[in-house]
Length: 616
Image (cartoon, rainbow, N blue to C red; front, top):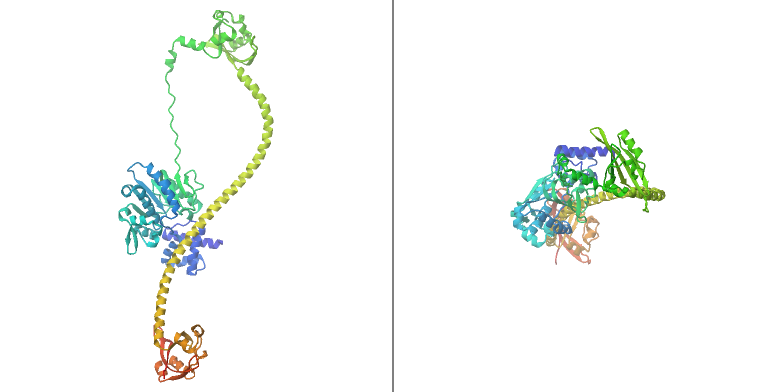
């Protein structure tokens, strides 16, 4: 559309919103343009400005426009296979998740004239039983079209509309009327119809099943996203969504997961919940720990996995745990001896200077990865040594020495260093491969984006085609009604033609109807038989131009006089006998009778000429 056309089109949408409260800005623009263009073509209007002026002058055109924009194409058990899957997969799950006696709520959004609402009622009543249906079920049908909702509320449908309803269901749930069938009154009370604009009105909440079949496809992408969010809010947890065959929910996997994607059945995604974790129990206080007996402390020290030695302030061995005794060949008799006299003071590492440093600095001294080749053992040991001054009330009372065996970790580190060298070589190869993979990944990403774009375009095209299909179906219904009317009119016309033919045959041997120019308008079968000229040859020809055995010289002036002065045509030919010749060339004297052919207001616009052959 040109910019001026777009502005006029937008002005038209604003007029609809401001004067009638219908906001079509969230609908697909191409569909609106196509439907409005159809109305303009019917009215023979050239542009949107002219159509806007017409709407302001003739308010009744709003109704016809809304009937065109709000395409109410629906039917009972529409897409039978989809309804069958709904009955097999969704309805049993829906009933199982509801405790006995709890209400079941269903919402049909965009219900049009209500056929799918009544279809849903029959499906649930068949599964639950009629009594349970009456006690537990509420079905809400909403639409934007008040005229369609009025049809839905009455629940009366023509026989042709019910052709897709199985005979047993038709007999169970519908009552015959003179003009069609009516849905059962006792079950009709469970169905509630009302107006709802999906683009701005609040959704019906706490519903267990939501039907929106071929409704989303009329909206643009942004509005579809908003409506799907409303649907997600409206559904209970879990709840089910039943869409039309053109609607996929490809970009809403965080809100709905497919139950049967081909049949467009979806289930609401449960919100994630995190279980609360109880805090770790505390079974003791600081006072409890301080009150524990000294024996427990000494046993814990002795059984520790790290070799520990304590040297008192005088430089004597004060304590060695079991691990230290085993590692350095110490025994209880060594307690009290000067530490410098023991082998552990200089092997595996010189500790005497380190102890002095710790005493002097009053801080810990760390020695990392001290290697010790112990006699009689094939493998060397590696230790981390910590020398820590021990203070009591700020006074140095001794020095603690801890030997942590890190042999295993040193071995692992060495192996890791060797492996790391190999990994560095492999890394270079992987780096090269990674660059190739990154290039490939970028190409795949680009391809994926193109595929996603193509998929969205295909989805949009599919929705557009489905919209056009419904428009064609709506037009087909209109044409069917017109065809039925034309068929009835044709039957009436045939009956009239038969009657007229019978009258014409009864008037005389030959009947000819002439217009104001004396051209043949009707040429009876008697005239064909008398003159040998077929009706298709005579129709539209001037009477004087026909090659027949009728003497026209005395007749034509009388005919013109009867048309011109409007006198009694019988007087114009009174007593006139013409010596005619029939198609076989034999004499056929005949009399002529004339009468005027008049319009409804009495004006003469032709003559009826009846000719009877005189018998000898």
